[in-house]
Length: 125
Image (cartoon, rainbow, N blue to C red):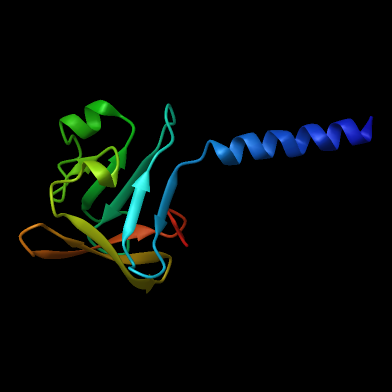
């Protein structure tokens, strides 16, 4: 009975982990990449400063209204994934900033904008 419970627990954890979104920073290039799993709900928000009470700068969400209408009025935009950002736009990891990660949004025209993701929004691999 205990073995069955333990096996069920590990099976539940593995299914749950497989369904998580994949947001990561490439260790070599420092580029932020986000490609969600199908049918998953998610929201990752980048802030102007390392504080969640500051202005929302960018949003990645599964909510089509939030993305299509940019309801949060994020200056850098709202997206389903990094692959759907404008041509040439990229995000780079700059380092840690307390309980946040400092990021650099580089537009296709070369304009750079610093913003902050809360820690835990992505992994480095």
